[in-house]
Amino acid sequence: MSQRSIAAVPRGVLALLALGLAAQIELKAVAPPPRAAAQDLPPAPSIAALRLASFGDPVALAKALMLYLQAFDYQSGSKVPYRDLDYGRLEAWLARILELDPRGQYPLLAASRLYAEVPVEAKQRSMLEFIYRQFLLDPDRRWPWLAHATALAKHRLDDLPLALRYAQAIQRHAVSDNVPLWAKQMEIFILEDMNELETARVIIGGYLQSGTIKDPAELRFLDERLKQLEARNVVKPRGRKQGKVSNNRRKCALFNKRSPFRVYYRPNRRLFSGTFLAGSGAS
Picture 1 (cartoon, rainbow, N blue to C red):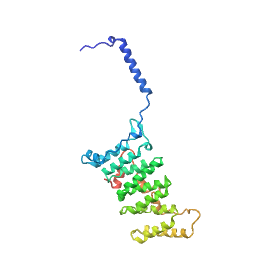
Picture 2: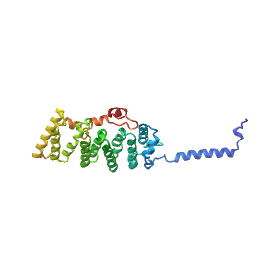
Picture 3: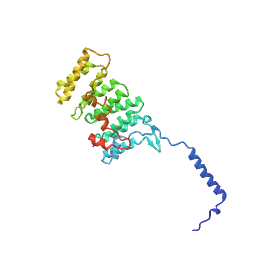
Picture 4: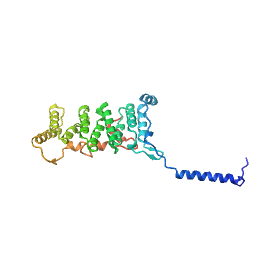
């Protein structure tokens, strides 16, 4: 097959080709960068459709969907801030993933450590309520995330009644032996902050009389705390006395930024955290 020289091509055709190439370069240069809109997050599929698509392996599909959801803020080189996401749809996706893998912990980790910490109060409260509802479905396994939600309600939202509601839920519903005492005692600390000293005293007295606490150190701590509250009920000081911090208060996620909860449940933003999954006992 013979080939013609480029000199044989009419000059008008070459000029048209050069003009088209220049126009394409110019349009590309002035075009705005692609932007992904927060409302582009599609509605979550039904659980029936997801189970059908899982081909008998819902856990694997749940992990894949979690990766898709967490990477959704990056699209075509553009970044959508978490605060701009449609939180109604976001919560629906997280709920579907938990339905596929009820023992999985990562959706609630992302809910509490990523999506609940956006600087928009309405969306923070919405995500904290989502965590609370999911906690009630499996309290003995999901208490760490409600403990973190309690800390957020207290420190980020400055909403002590909401923090108390979450702390009371942990105390009442998380009854497994693997739930640490500091998590159950958050209710007492919050009641003290709300100056509900008599209620805190009654709760501590109930702990001591129940016989469920066997650790001598824990019993000694509660007994000392009870005496302190009784003394404060008799004579209420004008200011808050800065005394020695107890071991339980030091461990509590509400008061210690380096509590075990914060250390061992640090999320990996882009990938599943193997350390967390192994440490939490998740499958």
